[in-house]
Image 1 (cartoon, each protein chain N blue to C red):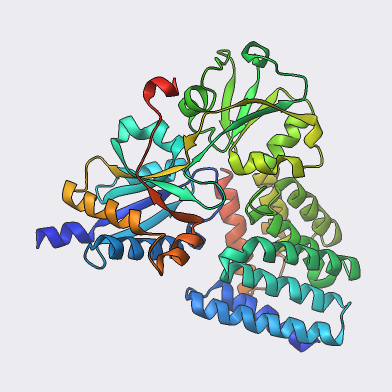
Image 2 (image 1 turned 90 degrees about the vertical axis):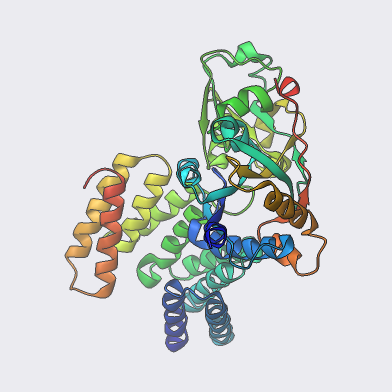
Length: 188
Length: 257
């Protein structure tokens, strides 16, 4: 189960940086197959439900004409993953839900809902307050709902939280995102 | 040589303020559209690039560039900027699930707004809020808003409707898809339709500042009108939620005011 979850995560990371739409479709199909295999073993496991959600997200990006249906499926899977283990992947179910709600097309074209995204981001921060991606999601939600000052404060907290961690590629990415957010809110 | 160079620099700017879609996600779709359009028009391969911008400012910035010869814009954008940018309609879009025209609907808290005067101090929120002339003179034709009414853009229509439902001095101006979805909202009974616009175009492809020679523009227009009927182009159009194009039929200035 852990290996399948890791494979889905690896597909997601590759897809994020993959410019070729054909390769993105292949990665999405691969992630879907891994999620199916995981759920066949452990239908109620947070790791498998979360993996299913991530796979659906990759498919939504790869098949834009079906994005709405796929994103709604993704939100359903995240709800179930959060019920099974809200702390999985550093409060991943609530954090990813927040990002989907913040970035998806809004009503009536899609499930996007900035206020619901803010509530989900707050849940993620409540569960894992020092994990930079949770703070970055909360800052993005505050910015999107019009609280520019609040967003700047949380971007600064995300930066501090990232700096407290050992150097890594992820940390550099979080710092870059925090700096961009601060620049956008006129704080740097 | 000069002709070839000029042809290769032509760009079609897609600009859709207030609607979802990031430039990165949309770029492959508009690239496909540009390829299909020039194939249908018989323009040389590679002679038209396309670029997407989801913001009004970004779209205007791109349209200032001399290579921006064509634009795909929502009708509110056209109303707001046609005169200044010298936009000449080439074709009118036939949009999936909507058609070539749509009505805009003003929605307020039930029982609060009965006539224009009762909107004093209100703010109108809309995806078309960046185009106040369109809101005042097209969407709300014949409904003379008080001078203190503010018109503001929003991409968060659901949040705007929640504010309307709680009784804030806010009204929402909805496009046809949004209006059709209103009954699905749990607080729909708190909302009231106040005013509906006449049928108005949804979106247009326009020539910018006469930057396309008349003959090439005619060829492109003929090609675009064929799209949607030709095998192979429906997938390209479908990815952009389009069914095809028709000749433009715009409301007369007198009718719009």
